[in-house]
Length: 345
Image (cartoon, rainbow, N blue to C red):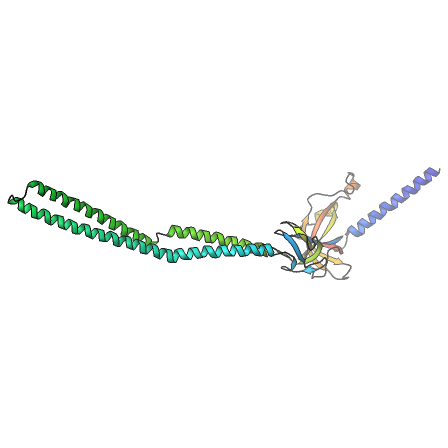
């Protein structure tokens, strides 16, 4: 008898609990009102993990949990000594490369032009000497040929003079070719024969400039800045800690990207659609409505509980719906409980 009484009490308590859960679900999670579907949830925000992009020791921390920050706000600083030294070294290397390039384009090129001109002058002088020698050989041959007509000289002497004349002519032809080559070389130098060397130095300058820019970037990265407006929800580093690239320093909640996640029962999910207008209210501002719209509807249902497959159980199947808050006006904050009314067509 006592056992049946205890069993009855337990059954009554279970029924009361089930009724309480159903009432909470109906009145707090979903209600079918006259103006549309009504559901409850909490204000949520996109969370950003702000990480360091370079290694170093934390020198300062400029933000604390709860601080509201703007884009570009300084959150923390690393010791910049090493990065500054690397920047000075890169700037010195760039200055040296630029000086070598300037010297090549100015002084060295002029020297090459002067050297090429001297080679032309020397070749021209040798050509003139060869021309004088040829003229002398031709005159000597003509004199001997005239004497040979009177048999005043032997024919061998005339042949030797003729060979000397031919040799002088060949030497003059060679000197003329050398002079032409020297003039061509001079023209090349004047037109930019050092272009290859200049291009190599220009490449060295570009590489040094890139190294300088990277060193400057590494120095800039010693300052951890806020990427977006929001509220600091987590401070993950302290002064004196050594961090590596990718180490998270802070977490931020973006106040410009707020939403509410609500759950709609399966029997009425067909009345919810993307872009659907919504009115959002919070206890902190009674009578005020904040505009929103449906931006996501879960493609899969969630079961409560999951192992119930009866018709009654399917009535408790819900879909997650994300409602973006379009104008929070800086008043809404993550964690606020909300009521959301989805306007129907």
